[in-house]
Structure formats: structure tokens, C-alpha cells
Image 1 (cartoon, rainbow, N blue to C red):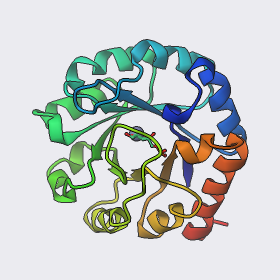
Image 2 (spheres, rainbow, N blue to C red):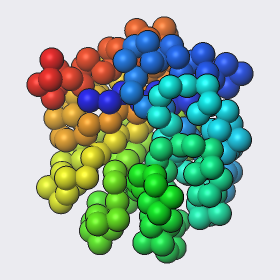
Image 3 (cartoon, rainbow, N blue to C red):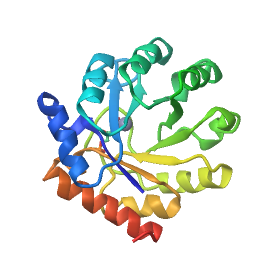
Image 4 (cartoon, protein in one colour):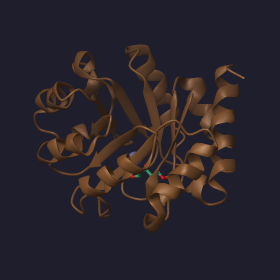
Length: 216
Ligand code: DX5
Ligand code: ZN
């Protein structure tokens, strides 16, 4: 079970410290949300901030590209030192080429699915894919309500593939077990981690996930 704090809900002026706080609660990965004001209405941070964070943390950093043109950003995120990059298949025209470009650089390649994007869209990508992010809110903002039906999407994906599944959006100590029981292994959480003491809140989520997985 891996807990991944989403920096979207952290204090951007103190990113390194915010990540350290979540790490103290058992986080194993940093979820770095990149938004371009086109694919989503929000605008966040890019490769320079990712590079600074990679230098400042011991945790691996995973970039979630919520942008219209991911291909032109992949090289800069590779140079930034992130370990993995996920793209949204809804806007990635040549998905095979994009995933290959991420893997050719030695990173893990992922796809993130909007809530209404069917899992079957990935059927022919599995040989080129290292993980799937099942979004349980609409991309763009933190703090939105968890979409319960996404547990069923995780279950369906689990029937289709052994590729590891992340869940992202509205994940709390209450919703995490539903996703873990369905087959998720990486729990991305923003507002639930940073609304209180990040170490305490991260630990609650990871432990709830472990219990649901029968690991604790
Ligand atoms: C939404 C992002 C999420 C977001 C989740 O577009 O992809 O990573 O930070 O935030 P919470 O956990 O608050 O739903
Ligand atoms: Zn995300």
C-alpha cells in the first residue's frame, strides 16, 4: 500500500517541508499535479518546480499531467528527475508514442482516466503501461466529492490487467478502503492530508488502506 500526498493541497511556498510532513506519516510517493488552464480550468506548476522538489525530497515524485499537450512537456519532466509520468488519454492523440517516449527515458508510464472515460480505452495500451490512475473526481481541483462508482471502474480494470492502480480524488480514510477492496494499491490524497496535521492524516489513510488489503 502506497500513500501519495498530492501537492495541490499543500502550501506551495513550503513544498519541501509539506512533503516531509507527509513522509513522516508513511507517504511513499509524491503526487505532482500539473495543470495548464486548457485541459482543466486550473493552472499549477511545471518542470522547474518539480526539479526543485526532486532535489529537496527523498521520496520519488510522480507527475500527473492534466494538460492538452503532454508530449512537449515529457522531456522537461524527465530532466526534472521525476520517476513516473501519467497522461490523460482523452487528449493524447498518439498515446503509444507518448507512453513509449516516457519509458524510453527510463521512467514509468501511466494513464489517468477521467471519471466517465471507460477503462476499455486502455485495452490496447497495457503492454506499454506501468500504472493506471483512476480519477475519482473530475481533474482540476482538490477538495471535490468522491465519486463512488469509480470503485467499480477499479474492479473492472483489475479484471483486465495486473498493472498497478492508483486512485486520485476524494480519497480519505473512509473512502480508501472501498478503492483498496476493489484493487487499488496507490492512494493519492490532497485535501484529506493537508486539512490537518499531514503526518497524522497520511498515516490514517495508509493504515485504512493496509487494513482493507489485509496487510495490517
Ligand atoms: C485533481 C488532482 C488530484 C487532487 C486530489 O485534479 O488530480 O490529485 O489533488 O485532491 P483531493 O484529494 O483533495 O480530492
Ligand atoms: Zn492528480
